[in-house]
Amino acid sequence: MSNGKQPQDSAGGDQEAPKIEFPCSYPIKVIGTAVENFQELVLAVFEKHAGKIAAESIRIQKSSKSNYLSITVTIIATGKEQLQRIFDDLKTLDCVKMVL
Image 1 (cartoon, rainbow, N blue to C red):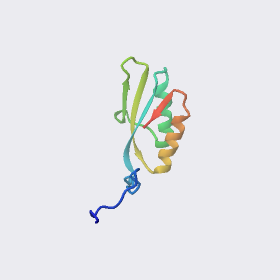
Image 2: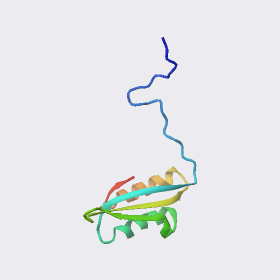
Image 3: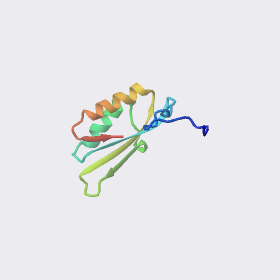
Image 4: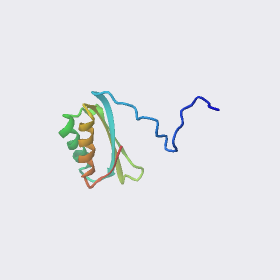
């Protein structure tokens, strides 16, 4: 007897990730150690791939003990390739611990 629902595998394999339509506003959060030039290094990567970043598109937050910083930068993303290049370049920075 069928309940009318499509079968799913245990990993939810029949669901697709939502499609992103480009260009779009796209926030990227970078978490890293609070080294002196962390903000400059991170913003240099974004500006290399997305052009000048406006101050209102940047949010910076310190951890409770000020050992880590998170920077959220909202860009106008032009495509998956651009996003992948940004993620790849950010991951090459020693001070970057996570990119979301």
